Every structure is written in structure tokens, then in C-alpha cells.
View (cartoon, rainbow, N blue to C red):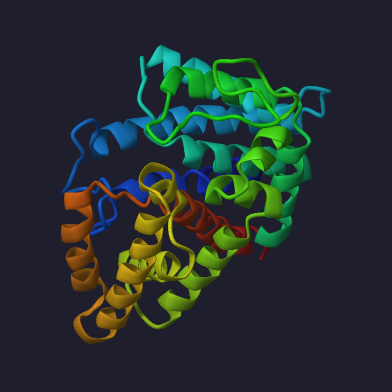
Length: 297
């Protein structure tokens, strides 16, 4: 595959971070019409540049076949970009953490692999990153996400030292959807990508196809950001709420069902950030697969 074709495929992997923040309605989340007190859709759109910078670095390092760790280098670039843009709030760390290995995998494989092979390689590179754990901690120290709680366990708490590897960090909180995706080879992201394709075959528009995936995943998987911030009862209640909304969507449509859910969750401060990170990857894989087919044929 030529260099320009690889760069085109890299561009497709940027699409999730670009499109996911614009989707509307989303329960409790930033959309193109609704914002949070500390961030809005412009912040997310600007943040896509930071993620793209990190992904480009991981891609180039991986493609160069040097002995450098592409995941660590990508995370370093992300940290540098956060400081350059003076970002001190967590806007899309989960999205960055999931997308950087995808870019590294594309550079490593260097031909249009099927999405399943791409994510498996991405997972392998993430789990093999030794310096990535330290850089990830440095990012957490800078952003100090609201869901970061007091921790006692086999690895140092954030601000109390550094882990030996990225794998050690991911496995210490494997209950989290984002961490679990990297450990298990992106199973939910693949599920989201395939569901977007399937929904589009039913002649739904792209946004509605993605919103249906979002609601279905919330009803089946819950959201671990809600779990981390509000506890197990909120997590379980959010799943039940989503199941009811999914049932109602068959009668009133997915948009109205999500609007009803949004009114309730926004008042409570609930935001399904982890599932939205995964939906973002599903969008990227959808575009990757779409363009990959044209490059092959």
C-alpha cells in the first residue's frame, strides 16, 4: 500500500473524535446543541486536533520500525498538546486512549487489514507498552478527572509514583469500559461498528444509525463513568432507564426516546462518557472499513 493511501486510512480513524461530539441528542452529554458548565462542543472539536497530533505521532513511530514505543510516543504527544493548548480539564481522554493504539496498529501493519485484525494489533501494542503507563499517569496528574477516586492497590495511586507498564494500569481498573476494550481487543467497539453498518442498511441516516447503537449499548452494557462517579446503584438504574428508553424507541423513535432520557440524566449530572468513547471508535472503524474497500478495489 502506498504512503498516500495509508494517510487516507489514518484520516478515517480521526472521524470518531470529530463526529461523536456533534451527535444529538445524547443523554447528559455535550452535543452540538447542549453543553456542560465546563465544556462545550467547540472544546471537543478543538480537542480533536490534539488527538490527531497524538495519533499521527504513534502512526509515524510505528511505521518507522524504530525500537521506540509507539503508544508511549503517542501519549507523550498528547500530553505535550494538552500543555500547548493549556487544557487542564478532561475533555476526551478515553477517546484518545482508544484511538492512539489504532493509529499505531495501522502504521505497524502498513496495509488495509480488516477492522478485527487492526483492533487486535492495537490491543497488543497497548498491552506491550512499558513507558505508556508512566505517561498515562502524567496525563492523569495534569487533568485529574472528576471520576479519579482515592486508590489503594498493587500499583501506585496517581500522584504517588508510577506503574511499570501501561498493561499494569489497564488491568488494575479492568472494570472500566475503556481499559477493558484495550485489554480484550476492542470487542464493544467492533460491536458498535457492525451495528452502525447494519442500521444503515435499514436506510437510517448516519446520525440516527449511531444513536440507535448508543441507546442499545447503554441498555446492554451500562456506563462505567456513571459507575465511577455515582456508584453501583446509579449504574444499575442507568441500565434500567436505558432499557425503558430502548423499548419506547420502537414506538416514538430513537431521538424522542433519547430526549426523554436526557431530561432525566442531565438533571442528575449523569454522562455516559465511557460508552461514548467506544461509540467514537465504532464510528472510526466504520469509516476505516468503508474507505479500505475502495482502496482495495
